Image (cartoon, rainbow, N blue to C red; front, side):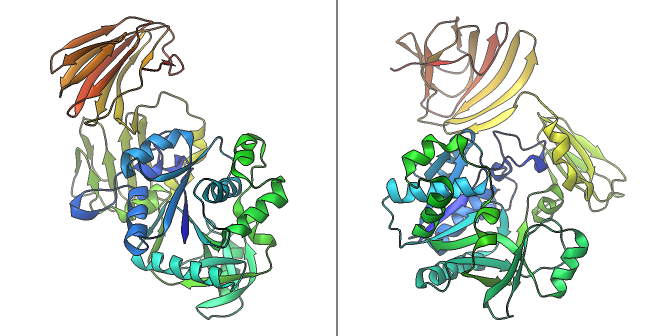
Length: 436
């Protein structure tokens, strides 16, 4: 059995904590084991491993998110990297070809495709195993998960089953309707579409050949940016005749908005926050090193980070995306495979950044053409390399790197650097990598 976890979204509905690099699935705000908070991707990966530890797990994601995935899950996790965002159907096809051509999976093997962002209990993953079993036995060419709905919603697709049995054929499959249509679907016994699909690996490759003319990994990767942008629902599900649905009655939440995310928080506040006694049903997340005081706030969500500040009624927070898409600016925080960085200050000809490297990690050996850099070691010990020459560093040391100087740093312990970039037109594109 193979799992493909779809983790390509940017999560703009959770701005300002999420951005194009630090997507919603990497926010460590969910209750985890040993009282340590965990992210969506950490939680889903852990739950799959606990229920189906022998299964193969591949994460489909974009280039910008690879470092954050390795930071949170380790270097050994299988990642299928999409060269561009082309929606879920191309991502699934590329991942299927990756499993066969790069991982050696059989076309007869059952594959479960699931999103990264549901908030669920272990029973959900046991149900995914049942779906894989149904697909492997040929109960249908495509197996869906149907969630028992709790209210008519415009946010989800709907599955209308032929019966009320735990496993049923499907009468109709519909994408997100308007509210009145959603009410009618519920009267017909419809289920929410959980965005989960199971089938044999060969089935996905057939669909790729039909739509794109190729199904091998290298060809799909090379022509990926030219592939049609289309969802798996539209490309496959709505046209499939051999289809069945497994009914899931357990806990399930889509935590893609602040309104639903707040429901999963163990406490009303995170960070330096004070709520007075007149506040009701208000959740606040503060990543800034300054206090937030809330008085008389009712049914609100407040979030503050280096990227911005959100103050919203909880219901209105679901409609944040178009406003965020119009905003542009410097990414202020990101997790990388080697550690993390936080932008502390941005001026016209300078930028100050806190860089934290995990023990045993290093930056790429690189240089900059248009800027000088200065590192001040704030914590830890390591080795700096400047134009091939090594130098040990410790707290208080200052290292200067003029434009053109090849440099890197190796962390012996956790290493914290305060990096000051100086020059005109400071840009992430001003970086040349070198072999060492």
